[in-house]
Image (cartoon, rainbow, N blue to C red):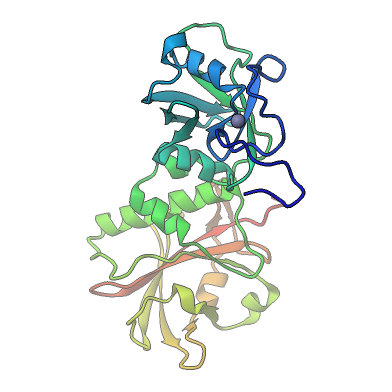
Amino acid sequence: MSDDDGIPECVYCYNDQGVCDRFPHLQNDRFFTLKLEYIQCHARPYVLEKLGFGLDDFENVETRRAHLRTKHGYEFLVKFYNAVDRSHFGCSNWEALCKSYGFEEGMHIRFDIRPEDYDDDDNIDICVDVDMPPVLPRSYFLSSRNTRKVVDNINYNYDSKLNCEEKGYLVSFIEDVEAFKNSHSISPNYTRYMPLVHTLLDDNFIAKNLRLLKQVVPDMLFTKGDMHMVSLRPTPSEAYHTAYSISSNDGRLKIKEWSKVMNVHTQIIGDKMNVRKPQVGDRFMSILHYGEGPVYLFYGILARREE
Ligand SMILES: [Zn+2]
């Protein structure tokens, strides 16, 4: 595929910037780029050599491993697929690398085959030369599959998007939920967790109740009942009891005794042992648990970004 007036893509490396002359060279003798995962033809011999292919092996259909790292400390051992005329990276670790920076199809990503600390022939490291900040923290990739799925299900209320570092807080929050459930022998949830991040506004402090988005309310949850609101910071946690109801109009869940949470004076805010009352602009992070036994609303509060 190419734009109407653009340069046609190379059939081997899919590059459409007109740089594919298939004459071997690297930019500044160290950089190469790829579109999606296909390596530019002119850089391919260098990558093959770096990964230990001999001159006679360039057309071998073979899979090897490459160690890719970034200046933000991310490292991924990815599969490198070689065919007669083309080579590309692939595998779940490659997808994880793309996900950690939000690489999208068609982007041109630059690599550094000879990073500054390159001094060893056995070194198969290739640097992904990215300036863009990562969008997912390293802890996300080190966490369990279950935790990653919960993070992927995140919902935001208002303009409450978490940055990379704040998503690290979400990862540890989800792990705390699991630890709390294990230590208190709480039965498994019936449906997958849908975390919600809600920016606290003026209204939240005067309102007697908070409404949670329909998307985060488990299917089949009784339309009226009681639940425990458990702050996971600090541990051991303090629990508040509240009644709730689900609106038949918009499906949102109303927490009736919301002010109990807003009036806590000793809430730990974020990870920084910052103890104070919740304030406007803080982010209220919650997970609604529905399984056999009581309903729980696990929550944590993350400071607004200026702090
Ligand atoms: Zn090409």
